[in-house]
Length: 285
Image (cartoon, rainbow, N blue to C red; front, side, top):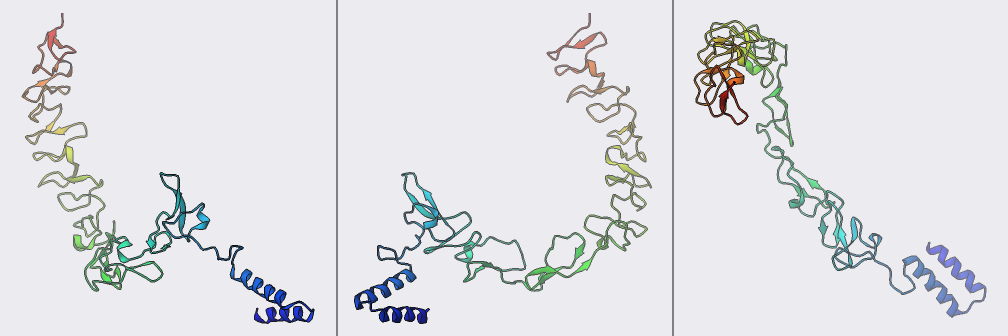
């Protein structure tokens, strides 16, 4: 660049131009290269808080936004932090306080680097940690990461104790990690919600059909408060009703009532009564 400028100057001098014109030409070239405008000063980008007309006038990562008085000012954009006269890139920082918590036990307090990025230094080396994987055990912090440990066994894989199975999976008497509950003899149940039906039971049973005095109620039966499989509905105390369609007549009712005779304001309507829309027993005739 300097040799080219010198060549232009010597050619102009050889062409007989006056000293004033030569100096003017040289200064004009220098002004153009430095970016000065006609007003004699270079146009500089506006800092946060300075008045602007458009975003292009603001420093990088800042936008030109109007206020409630109709004036516009340069403001750091969404996700950007103001560091003195500069705006960081979105997600950047000025200090460690600008950095979010990474939720990692294996890292320490964040540090804001010279490049305005968040750095999380390793911490708690060798400390026990949870990697969020239910099929790992004995994990620990290693260089900022929760890692290591032993791999646990999944559904259908062999086990010696429940501690060998992935979190929440029981170990059956046959040494298999079950995906469901375990029957009373220790075998895997076919359904995840099934459980042991009783101390002497070897069967699996849905919870609502499990009875203390019975193996497991049939699908159309439920277990009473006394541990009996009811062939009908239950009264308000959980005892079996004599008829299959009977229901509890009210919170204080100890008897069973056909649904059409159950009233809110009465225990149970008589044989020749029905329940009105207002909740009262009225004569059917």
